[in-house]
Image (cartoon, rainbow, N blue to C red; front, side, top):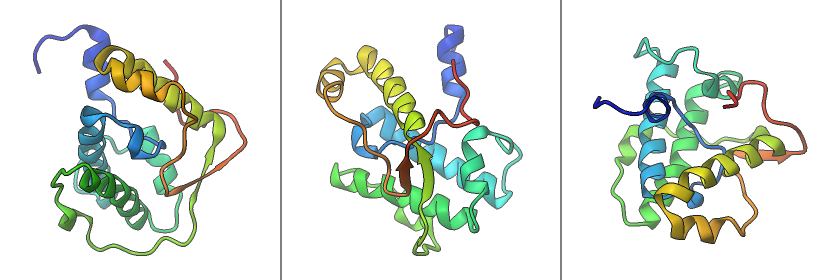
Amino acid sequence: MPDLPPDEAQERLSMRLWSLHPRYLDRQGLLAVWREGLLAKKVLQGKTKGYTKHPQLIRFKKTTEPLAYINAYLQGILEEAQERGYKFQAQKLKPLKTIKKKIILNSGQLQYEYQHLLKKLKTRDKKRYQELKKLKAQAHSLFKTVRGQIEDWERIK
């Protein structure tokens, strides 16, 4: 990795599995969440030693079928990518199962992530930032939003 300012280096080392609907992500964010989601899948499969205790994985690990849930999460990312004309490898999501029960997401977490994304976009995509700052955030289709605070597992900067 090239020499980066400490904040940027840390950002690149952190994993973010956005609770936000992927429509809000810019190109860079969409590509990153796909890669990070695939890494999360490898972690849940026990195929890598890194990130095994990453807090963003807690909500997937708590489900009855973590692999089915991470695949469903990635399916939402894939669908958004396809709408934009990207060619992500859908076969990486096999086997796909229908998810009957959504993961509960606190509204405070959703808002925290939305503000986090807006902060990123303010510097790297001002046009998208201007468009999104007026909107109300919606969650990824895997999540059901309920009233509540930022999740306990979130690392607040």
